[in-house]
Image: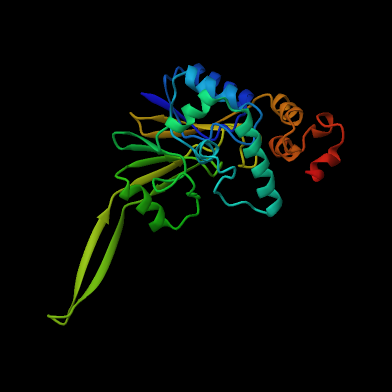
Length: 271
């Protein structure tokens, strides 16, 4: 049976609709969302309500948590102070726009979802805010999966889709045994483990402009990273009309056709 995994929707309704349509086209009924339904994008209520309407099993993302707790700042690493300020603006805007009913839904979301040996989280099993980057130290990455008692760990948060297979490994430790005055060797063999990042539906950062998600086949154990195009102009226009930082629109479109969406492209540098 195939199941789909989506993550980091970030209030981008056109992207979410396009991805769900693609999932439906593949005849997939089981969908798991790894959180961050809100943040950056202009459609927080619409996206939350669509996920609720579809009854999609969902983990709580870092933005979902922070908006509910009133922190007004995602506890994530920003590349600059300017980027952090824009993130704060998006948090404040989202907090004022979200309905109490949808805030309640975000507050009720679990930190993780487990199906047999599959574990679904937003950031890592330790925290919604921890990044499991594709170049993370192999032992640390393996530790995250093994300590969580999973064989395959599905995560998001980085907005970078990837499949990382952590091959059969051996850990050897030599302990000094004082009474015997000799070294005691211990060895532990670790089985194959995998980390699968679903990327981002609403704000991809993999170098392209398409939304990404993952299809997992539990019979073949195959992972398929999918890309889906959507009406980016519609989202960009909504970002600008909502009064959100224009840079969020530019990031989505990578500059393509941005001049047609803003009265003055220089506004990007004003916020």
